[in-house]
Amino acid sequence: MTALDLIGVYARLRAAVKQAGDQQTYARQIGISPAYLSDVLNARREPGDSILSALGLRKQVRYVEARNQSATADGLAHPRADVSSQSNSPGARASGAFSREG
Image (cartoon, rainbow, N blue to C red):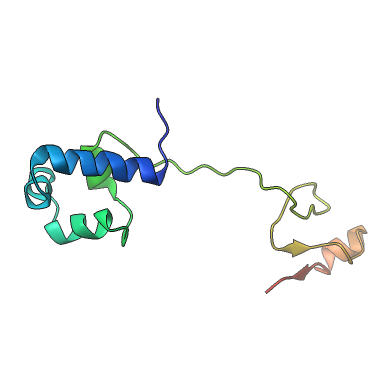
């Protein structure tokens, strides 16, 4: 299974449109509107299931660990939690003493 980023999906879509001859023809072939296809090709919208399916793809979301994240008392990184100046005692956790960045 080959993973593609969004740029790779757009490249594959452009190749499929070129092979079909033009946007209108490709849109008709896969059952979507030419306006929607144009929006996707111009990065105004992300490709949905109908386009991905026609390209033999499906969307899969991945979450990866980011660097320099604050770690909370539970040992997990929470990007919005600011625990640097807060007490790490059980009472502080239970009372919701962790501040949030806004």
